[in-house]
Image (cartoon, helix red, strand yellow):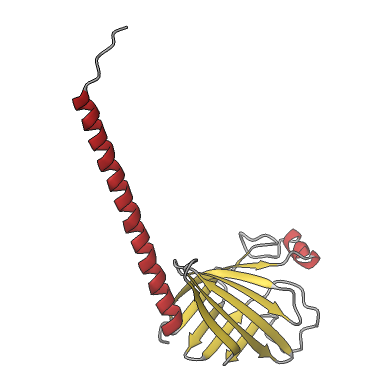
Length: 193
């Protein structure tokens, strides 16, 4: 075995390369963080100051015997299972114009009270101005939180919406006549029709 004496020049060169590498990696992280903050502020501005539309890709109903039976009978949409229903290709939205909301959400779950004749096939529909509308921004988590109440005939709903910095949306919907359900999707600026 041959031992070479320590070369101070090589050690210094290695330290400089290591220092530059750490500086570069730290710079990339701060640029990434700045981009995330900018995206979060853009999303916050969209939700607070613009008309927007939420389109959903998944419905996540509570697991019940009825949902399990639908799943076992292969009556759910393609790529769906009892706790996660694929909504791609089906009508679904929440549209906000000024103070007014227009909502159409397919519903998967259990109703405690039967559907009236000539109804909307069990979908959740609402058009109008909701009550108790609240909008808040969580600085720490960088997401917007919206909550409101709405009423359709004799049924009342409480809706909680979370919009993250990447414009991903999670909606929790509670009803006086149905089991709770969650929807996930994306928010975008409302296109003029």
